[in-house]
Amino acid sequence: MAKFVVEFEYSVDREGRQELHPAHAANLYDLAERGILLLGGPLADANAGLLVYEAEDRERLEQLLAEEPYVKGGIVARTRIREWSPGKGSWIEALNRPGQHAA
Image 1: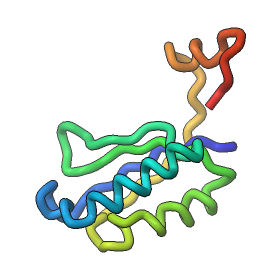
Image 2: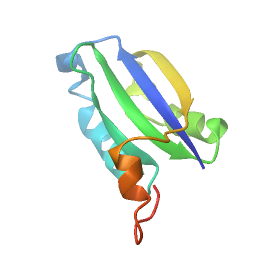
Image 3: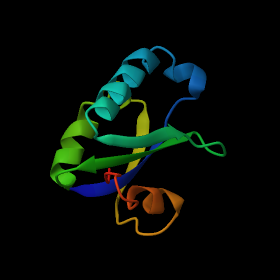
């Protein structure tokens, strides 16, 4: 499984996203429960969000992103996808401890 960092830049402000936010949040909770969305949240210094996914490959990730309510609703102005190979940091160390499972 590959990990991807995805940045959504929005074409509307937070208030303009409110109508679609319940569907967006429900989608993210579903993906998290399925182990696909590892982290996600808004960027503090930009009209954007950052999400970390684990998917079979980029094609599968792009299918998932096409179903994202903000994307379907036309309020994502730009999507940036980067494949990521995390290897260092306290989260990685915690995952590598005996008895722990990698995400």
